Amino acid sequence: MAQLSDDCFAFNGPLLPVADAERLIAERVAPVDGQATATLREAAGRVLAGDVIAPVNLPPFDNSAVDGYAVRAQDLDGERDSRLAIVDRVAAGHSASHALKAGEAIRIFTGAPMPQGADTVFMQEDCRLEHGAVIVPPGLKRGANTRLAGEDIAAGAVALPAGRRLSAPDVALAAALGLTQLTVRRRVRVALFSTGDEIVEPGTRLPHAALYDSNRYLLAGLLERFGAEVTDLGILRDDEQKLARAIAAAAIDHDLVLTTGGVSTGEADHVRAAIESIGRIVFWRVAIKPGRPVAMGVIRGANSGDGSAFVGLPGNPVAVFVTFVRVVRPLLLRLSGALPEPLIGLPARAAFSYKKRKGRREYVRVKLRAVADGVVEAIKHEQDGAGVLTSLTETDGLAELGEDVTKIEPGATVSFLSYASLIG
Ligand code: AMP
Ligand code: MG
Image (spheres, rainbow, N blue to C red):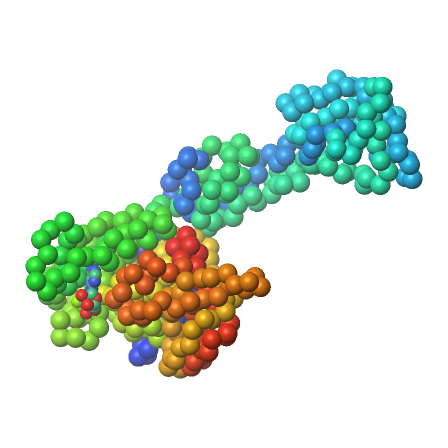
């Protein structure tokens, strides 16, 4: 499905740095084939299959940016007020019936086409009226308060590039250019499982020692934000053969099979062995916390070179979120044919102290507080267990602590990634 070949990854080391995982994905995973047509109303969130070329100028004609008086700059006195006779009036959607001649002005409103001969517009607030004439002050530059044809996008230019994940403003631009539909990539098909003998579906009875499944709901929501077509395949038991059968079957008609739980080294963790029986593990431990056990692999397809991607995320919900952001997000973008969308952390002032081990990237859940001098302070959630869901629901984002960091003291600058930026 996803054109992953068995040997598309080279890495075999024990603990893969996050950047290497991202690089492997960027270099070795090919986007899915297939295109679709989306109407403007369907297009947000889809990935453009080709460049959108502007068929017309935007704006289509020179027009006024303000309500005021259209004039010829050459008629203006550089030192003193100028007095111009008002000869016409033009509102948006209409045309002036006069071309402007020497010493004349035309009353004009925002969006109205510039009358022939006019090149400059005075804002009405800057003008005085006197017996059918307008008095305008000196000092306005030629071309002021006008919008020239094509200054936004010129006909023939690339308005939106191939691989663009369409935002609402992107769709608005396509609409402004008069387009009604866009050619987009087909959606990435993702099969989703939870694993674990203790996991039960919300809405059913909660037996002793059981836990309601939250991971599938977390992931389904996240995947949909990235435009994926999600098939929710429920909960799998901790049984290697059953896992292997279910994952292999899902791989047939999905580009990516995503599971949670069962990837660490406990005796009840069978996902890794299951994948090795139906495909190949590419890496299964990443230097990331929370979330170290995260397996990526390829499920063999019927023909060589047509395997599906597999990602086995950890079981703890916060680890699921963090590894989704750092492994699944770039993989999904890549499979969907989207251009890379690097995450850019913003500086925040740590209001916490923290110790960490060198060599891995750690994510601290933080709430932001604006402090008096305009600086933003990051306050660590009091619970940092990887299973504590409220540490996600009660915070604003993640402070990302790089591999080389060993401790953070209050007042240090940390890189803040907002949830909004991570899941958009
Ligand atoms: P595991 O990696 O399978 O040992 O799971 C690690 C922890 O995550 C265990 O405490 C699990 O109960 C918990 N967990 C696993 N799957 C889920 C799930 N779908 N929803 C909520 N918690 C889970
Ligand atoms: Mg488990």
